[in-house]
Length: 216
Ligand code: VGL
Ligand code: ZN
Image (cartoon, rainbow, N blue to C red; front, side, top):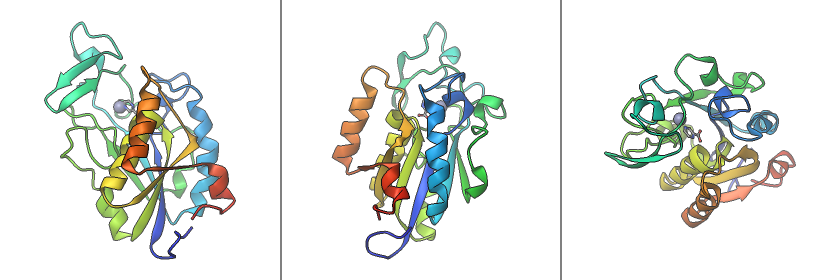
């Protein structure tokens, strides 16, 4: 797929399509597994395909279990700012951290692992939550002359949103494929994330537009 100028390449970044974010998983997103089919269908249409994988050590600081007395989904102040404490999820090497078995991982040129430093969470595929540790993804996309980056996956209001906004900050045109993403929606987090994305300049599309070739 080329972009509207015919210049440069277009990438699909499928965010965290992992067992722990699907029904039955440790941090299950409602209907999370439904993103697999549209992502598989769209992947061949993109020049560049990237998967991300949330990949936490068992002592990760985003886990409520690593904060005495803290409940999952409560908030704490980290050195780098506010952080939601999650149920333990996507622990390195576990089945929960594996990609959904239906996902076409064979089509991906790059898998970006994130959140593997105990002290820092990483929602974004580009930048960890301390806002200074990068993952290298921007450099990879730039070197392949990518100008437009599409995002889909889990979860719309956390890792998809933070990734899409960081794409804008890195100078890419950034689009979220809404029907190929599902949200956690914690205390209004989906509405908040949609507003932040819109304010940042992220565009919203549907997979049908991509499959029909009506988005460029
Ligand atoms: C995610 C919470 C914690 C996500 C990852 O993929 O959206 N959310 N870790
Ligand atoms: Zn995580």
